[in-house]
Length: 172
Picture 1 (cartoon, rainbow, N blue to C red):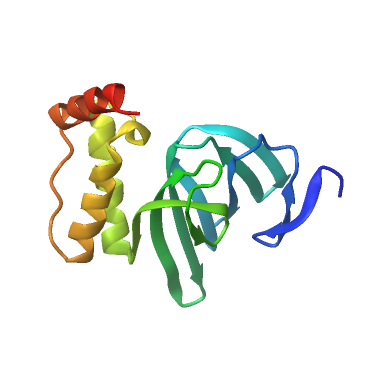
Picture 2 (cartoon, rainbow, N blue to C red):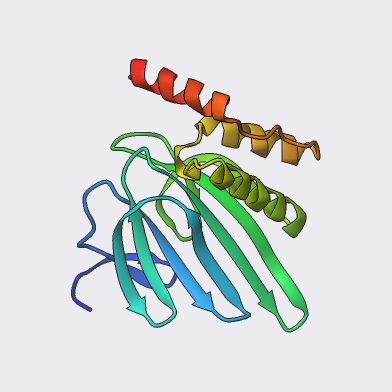
């Protein structure tokens, strides 16, 4: 298969035509069985593998949400969401299935009630007219910590977002 390098990702070879230092995510969609999808994030690369799978890529420092769901004949077996910051050259990272090389993990939750709550919080940020990928990374860590402790996270606000943007504009 030309255009692919020997490494493996989700049962498929890694594409070699992605820009350097791109975080790659293997997505799969098999109706009613497996859904690996991106909920938010700005891709800089995309390659179709076959009719059910593709690989997308994210630039360093971009934030994205990766949702994984799978079922069998008896019901749901996997329901999880991960929100990651794509890493740059030489940065430490956590590894995840279907993500190469890995990322800075901001949120990692499993179980439908928690996944559903995160999706609701993402929708609430969208409703503010804010792209969830632009929300403060500290907010996603807050959501992770609160939901892990079975506590309700605070809602993201326009003031919080404006403060994050101001801080980001003056700090490297």
